[in-house]
Image (cartoon, rainbow, N blue to C red; front, side, top):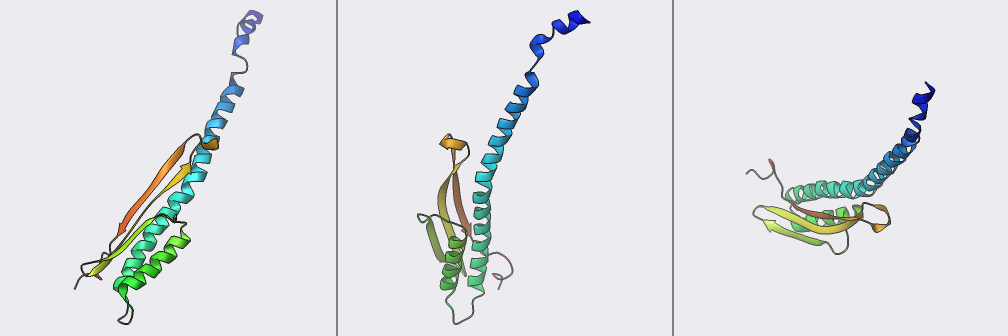
Length: 135
């Protein structure tokens, strides 16, 4: 029994190193998620706001210009969702409806200390769909 324990002295301490390695990897994954999830959420929220804006443009009353309704709704969505000031915004009529397009890029620091930055590209065209377009 004593001889068996002497042969295993080189195996001691491996669990602490593995625990530390797993902890570091988990911390890096959590950091990346902490940085990426809010930007992805803002992008998804902007898509939904754009879709709502173009539907509001179709259903605008006779006294309001549909393009002005869409522009004001899009401007509110841009402010609420932290869209960069260099974003490309196009709002134009498309047949019986109005379409809106927004394009921008953001740098997301995925790894700490600026080791790796992910380029989040947002490019979405909102076109109204559904029963409002059927005449």
